[in-house]
Amino acid sequence: MAETRKIVLTEAEMPTRWYNILADLPHELPPPLHPGTGQPVGPEDLAPLFPMDLIMQEVSTEQYIEIPQEVQDIYKIWRPSPLIRAYGLEKALGTSTRIYYKYEGVSPAGSHKPNTAVPQAFYNKKAGITRLTTETGAGQWGTALSFACAQFGMTCEIWQVRASYDGKPYRKVMIETLGGVIHPSPSDLTEAGRAILAQDPQSTGSLGIAISEAVEVAAQSADTNYALGSVLNHVMLHQSIIGEEALLQFERFDDYPELVVGCAGGGSNLAGLTFSFFRERWLNGKQTTIRAVEPASCPSLTQGTYAYDFGDTIGMTPLMKMHTLGHDFIPDPIHAGGLRYHGMSPIISLLKETGELEAVAKTQRECFEAGVLFARAEGIIPAPESTHAIAEAIRAAKAGEAESILIGLSGHGIIDLGAYAAYLDGDLEDHTWADAELQESVATALTRLPSIPA
Image 1 (cartoon, one colour):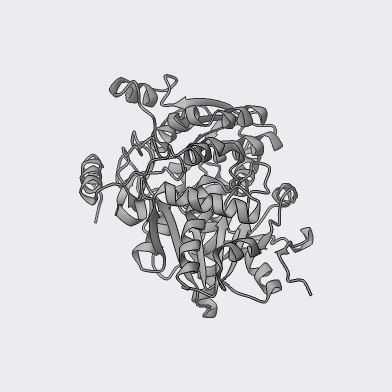
Image 2 (cartoon, one colour):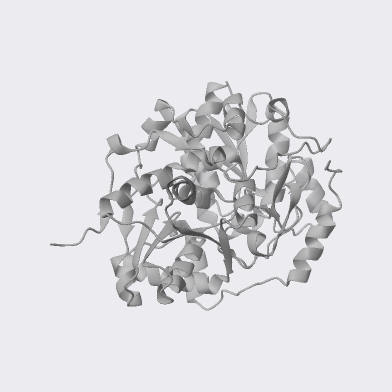
């Protein structure tokens, strides 16, 4: 009998609830703080940017939250997503380790990002909002939010990190085709952008700068809100459908992963893949190692400082306790693999700080080498972000670390072929940071924070 290669759930089997890890966290999550007063923020502080439904999800401690039917109906365009046994990769590696990947590239945007873009657009539309602003790095989030806004007849305006805007022109085309309006960041359209350009007219940008621009514009219009594609608790919540589906699919495979590996930038893909497995560890005694993989050129978990910091460059957002490289950190523009944010989700940061989560950093040539091997073995060109998880899974399989491994394949790389071309042509360079460089950067950034009460 042929072995099962892929488990695809039916629409009727798609989970109808998001899992909220805040209900089960073994340690208290430090609250976000107001950027002006340093005091914990309340719902009224977030109301200028987010609808009340999302604010309530941000602070909720309910274990499960029902997915609105309108969101479920759109999810069903691509969900449930497949869990696939990587027989081709196993054969190429000559390993007895069973390797699986949860493939999110089947979404209209080609990544996991619509899992939160759709509900965010839904709740904003419900609140009477007609326009959303946001930032995007490599472009997956901007693509996803443009798609989501189109589903609800809303306008989407995006600031994309200049290095990616210039290096990935087809992202701009994809976003505009889906109805989004996109600008390179820093831009001359905002005070934040103009301030950065005054300091460095050739600035290649950062997610922190792009966030500052998008937040500034949203705060100036009553009909406009801001949407964030990672980091915040409600984003992690919406992404949990990935892990909830994966658990059901592993039951069909009659297997369970000993190691779960996901790429980590701001944390949304990693959270969506892993939070349900943390629950199974804490409540049901399942033993699974969970590992985050980040780029060596933007190593917030492995070389950052766990401290309160701004989520943006200018200092408009609440202060969050997270692993950070400093809110004015700008990744080296040679980095082609996405995952460029200076900080990390407060929940994921706490899990790393308390030893619940492991983290490693990888250079981009190792990651793209793994991506090419995966493409030739499995027929899917992975997103550059996903290659980080693939590279670590390959290393772990070769080392015999686990009998079964789950990879979070967060998206496909069809719009990122320029990075693959650079790798194949031998033009891709590795970049790492000395600890002293990053510690100095963080220390300087943290001196500009408001005083934080004990």
